[in-house]
Image (cartoon, rainbow, N blue to C red; front, side, top):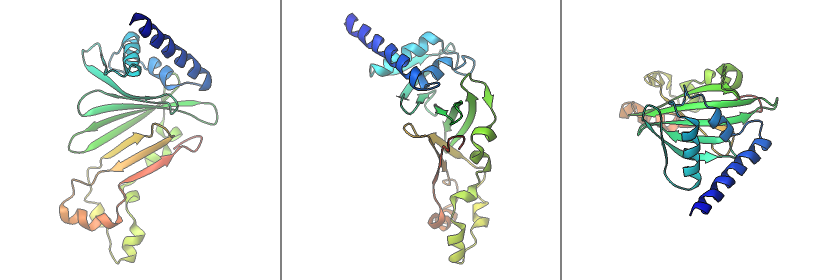
Length: 218
């Protein structure tokens, strides 16, 4: 049993070393560089333990210094993606994307779900220094609730739906990164609208929009 665990550990270290040669920064390296102040005071030893448990296909639950359980739920080293749960209603995604310039960006996506889900993305460089959203993801700043509705089709049908769309407040956008691709999927929640308004908007509503990485930005 001990020798089996050693093989797993050595294989795990080999994978990390190999991937660091392929990417300017990989998801494993980004995870270990993740500042302890942001990552719930999780120590390097706990990070290593969590990843080893994950690759051993065991529940990858680790504890922060606040004694808060954190569970690593997905690691994709090819897609440079990692996700972990911080509670029953909240999770965090980390996505590393290399720009054509050679610069790597780390996208930190915090997701909280109650009656509706809401997300907040913060962008960092490969040393975990803040990067303004307009530099790497300007599409998010331009995003409007109108983007999820086919206003032209509604107009052809003789309907003015913009007044109905205005009822959609406050806004809750649920964002998720694709694990395999450099795509960002944005979902608009309209469940809080009254039934009549929801039914009137449904023929013109697209629940999700996908933003693809261009080589320099979303």
